[in-house]
Structure formats: structure tokens, C-alpha cells
Length: 234
Image (cartoon, rainbow, N blue to C red):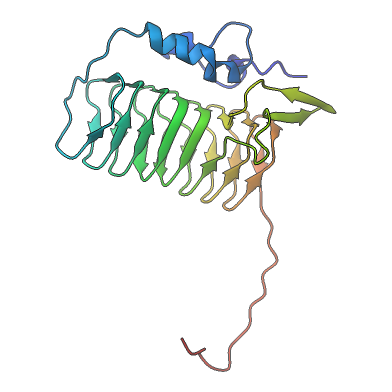
């Protein structure tokens, strides 16, 4: 069984926030106490570029690096650490316990909560990233949802090799390794782990579980086409 260590999903060398991942601990461990401890130890609470009028800051400590653009209409709630050369676009909502590396994008009407984005990760169009980790250069297709809570409210677990892997977390969305790509309107159910380079087709719903590196997940639909005798009345 894989050990689900961070280095199995990400190239951590050069990532300034690599210390949030504890040695020998499963990758999702970084979303729990490790994230709180990392943010509590952060001392560089400053907004280097300044914020334009129309950005809503709802409290909590915030750090934003040089060269980052925050557009009017974005909503920020700390604790929040944003790296350099990021884009936080209109309507984005970053609502606490969030760490972004350099060159990340949180796009219009995307929500990010309790999440770690490595350098170059993009959540650019109407995405929900809850209690999740995106690796380097991950791109979420428009409307991709990383669901983080089971309807029954129990601990998030997932099956693997005939066993049940327990995360110890009631809220846990997904881990996407370096270079993953999701098609538009993909839904990742709680407890999805994608190895590096995985790709999903549009409209796919992924069940909880581990998907090995470079897995392509397709959706096949049977379509029926009918030629209408007349145009239906509105």
C-alpha cells in the first residue's frame, strides 16, 4: 500500500512552504494541526503590493507577496499567506487557513478554504477548493468542485487495496499531485488522491480513493439525437 507521503505527489524542493508537510506523515496531515502550527509561526504579516479599493478584508492576519495582483471584489479572510506574482481575481473568496505559493491563480467566483496551493497552481474559474492541496502547475477546469465533507458528517476515509484508509479528518477534500488537470465541471468527492499528471474528462465525478500517477479518467455518455418536426413553443 502506498504511504501517501507528500513527496509521492509533489516536488517540494524550492517550495517555500514545504515545512507545512511533516516528515513521515501522510500528505493530508498538512491540513490539520500542521497547518495551524505553520501559520502560527509565520511572522511576515505584510501586504507588499497594497490593496486597491473594492477589496474586502474580513479580518485575520494576511500576508501578500510582491508582484501579486488582487482585483476589486475579492474577499479575503485570514489567516492567509499569498506568495509572489499571484492573481486573485474579482469575486474570489479566500476564507482562512490558506497558503498559496508563487504564481498561483484564484479566479473569478472561486472559493478557497483551508487549502495549500503549490507554485503555479490554478483555480481560475468558479471552483471550490475546500480542505485540499493542489500541486505545482495543477489546473482546475471551470466549475471543478473539490467536495470536503461527507453528507453523513463522518470521518473521511477511502478504500485502497481492499482496506479502508482513515484520514482522521472530518473535512478533507482532495490532493492533486503536480501537473494534474481536471475537465470542466469535474467533481472530486471527499478523500480523492490523484497522483502526478492525472487528467479527468469534463463532467466526471470521482469516487473517494487513490488514482495512480498519469491516470486518465473518462466519462462515456450515450447520446440520442432527434430531428424535430417543428421548433417547440417557448
